[in-house]
Length: 329
Ligand SMILES: O=C(N[C@@H](O)C(=O)O)c1ccccc1
Image 1 (cartoon, rainbow, N blue to C red):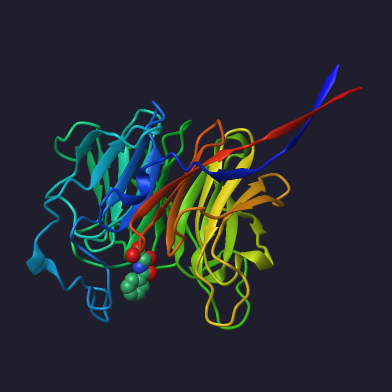
Image 2: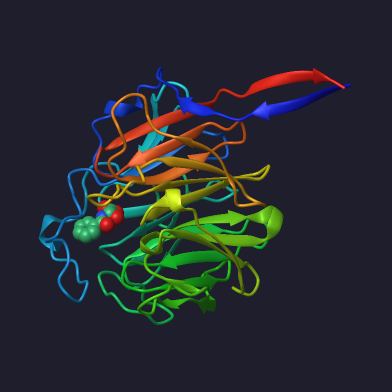
């Protein structure tokens, strides 16, 4: 009988033409049920130092919403545009995820809102949060960063956000159910404390929700039903910031970290981890150009990985070059 000992490597798919799509800041990536790549970008708007006041109120309303289509559906092989939507709706796109029915779930950090959109371009199916009003109660977010929808229960989880430190759970029709998380106290970051919960990965096989705890440079995982802390995944090679996390059925967890601060050793890169052990089994960087601020990562079952970069305004594709040594036993 043959035994496979896969030596897992991924490297950039250099035939992918997604590096110069002339997009705005690419903030969110997801794969739809047909495995098309969907991206969320900011068109001609940018998030910079002048975008918010000290109370996190968006300062550039005068610009109006982004007139370009902010949600693009691309062919995952050749980056050809298949469909686009989402114009005149958003000010500062951030997170994007797609549920098992193909609905798009997005966050806008300027509006402080979460939207559920059908794949057509009709009215949003659900909006959570109050437009342009930051807050931290049951119906106000503060720069919410991502959404994850449980494929089994339909429960909605929101990572809230740059100016809050919590995960909020809503029922499938948007009623507040539960929340957990608190600000990171000075000194050590304890379990359940966040410093920008920045990206979510829902792990149905283990009924866990994993969070990229960005400025604590770590991933924290919690029980879906209760929000109870399960474990932290942290590696020295993550450096100071861990921006995004994504799970692919079969047990692999993907992540991207932040640029090193001056004088720090850990380079900006992508990570492939074994979910159950938390161990890093591969790292990856582009061959063409280089990561600047990799902001989201998404992987498909065949281990194709896409990374969107909010500064480089680029989308890289990586593919596994698994070398299978065949040993007869
Ligand atoms: O983190 C920032 N941005 C990115 O996450 C992003 O989503 O663009 C940011 C921080 C301070 C000022 C301006 C931008």
